[in-house]
Amino acid sequence: MTVNDKVYRIEYLLGHGKGGYSYLAEKDGQHYVLKQIHHEPCSYYQFGNKIEAEQNDYKRLLATGIRIPKMIDIDIARERIVKEYIDGQTIFAMIEKDIPIEPYREQVYTMAKQAKTCGLNIDYFPTNFVVQNGLLYYIDYECNGYSDTWNLENWGIKYWSKTEEFMKYIRAEQE
Image (cartoon, rainbow, N blue to C red):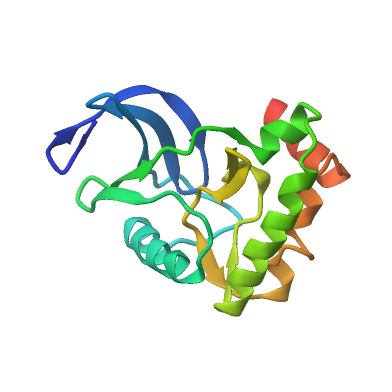
């Protein structure tokens, strides 16, 4: 795939979310995440201009001090973003494999406090968090105005262990 006339070799799909497809990409011996925005319908979320939202949300997140991957490049016309690759497992994968995530709960609560202080919520679903060298990174750029309904305590933490909500999500993905 090309991003602003730079060619990236796609190695494999990392994941698919409500906003796009993220691929592990390589250029000049370095790994990156290349996100291609998609326009598939999403019944529970309303979008405006997705690529502009990603760019604006990145700037808002930088102001919070939350650990996020650096945005390397953005191609508005092709709706593609190149991000720093955070090499590690997602919290979701760790929960699935029964790997203890307790050391990372304190870090996500710190992120939640940082987000709330800046009037934001982030998407606390555990696929959006990767552990690298003992540090938790929020790898998505999505953020919204703060609301108690969508904060960590009232929504996100329900998915940070093998709760009924977590298992329901697993079953739905397997169907």
